[in-house]
Image 1: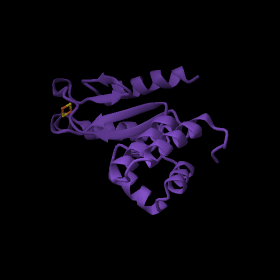
Image 2: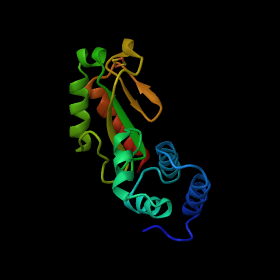
Image 3: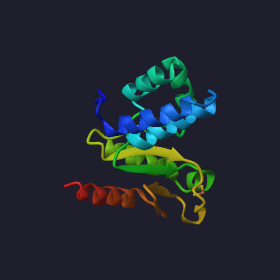
Image 4: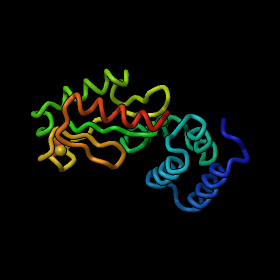
Length: 163
Ligand code: FES
């Protein structure tokens, strides 16, 4: 539940108050969703209800917009976001196997986050580093020439940070 004295909520409300003064359009709703995501990291039920109530827009419409654009996160993400490249060059070099290894190691599927909120697994298209295929990105770092063994080592070394 959002606290009413929440500073993030105050900032979001101020932002919405500014937007409300202008003519309503979908791009304004998108701007609000961006702001909410910037503040909270993802768009949860409470935040969406708050936007619906303040902006007087049906919640279902807001969810429709949020789910249409893939850049909105509807669930909280982990501390580290792993993006496995499934572009052609990576696929040819065994990206599917790399993905399977990660899924098995972390016991999550694409789009999911581990229970400890440490890792989120995503798939992506060409990262522009095909020469290093197969490739994955963890946060903003690219890891190339992956093998299943190497992937497990990388995950373990990051998991150790956690201990
Ligand atoms: S296809 Fe994976 S980096 Fe280009």
